[in-house]
Length: 167
Image (cartoon, rainbow, N blue to C red; front, side, top):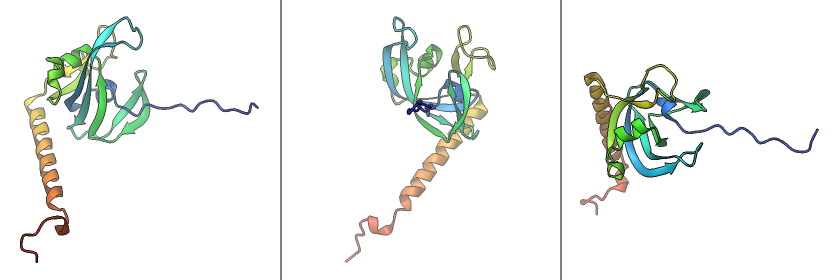
């Protein structure tokens, strides 16, 4: 037996478009990059968006995919920071004005052009417009988050606040 080991497999810890298939998500653009070389063919370039993706449908964790295959590893949410999208239809949907879209939030359902079929040439990823019911779900989610944040801030210990009547 050799005196060395093989490298351990390192599973991705990031969500991808596959992770969010069929999920109602808010995509907040945090970075826009123009003409990023394609990893498999550096002669081709594409725009890329980095985003915070928040699942607002209450559907629980999202699964990590590797080479379009499920890994059995799940990420808790609902917020997933640093998600990259280079799929043309998603990039154009969330950042139609390029870098000017940084800070914008877009609501939609991530799905392939032909829903339920594998993503690839002829079946790219994209966003489906939300229904009125889904818009209400997202609005309720954001309202609940705002209330929770305000409640947390008010719950700060009294010693942390200036008391104008203290002697």
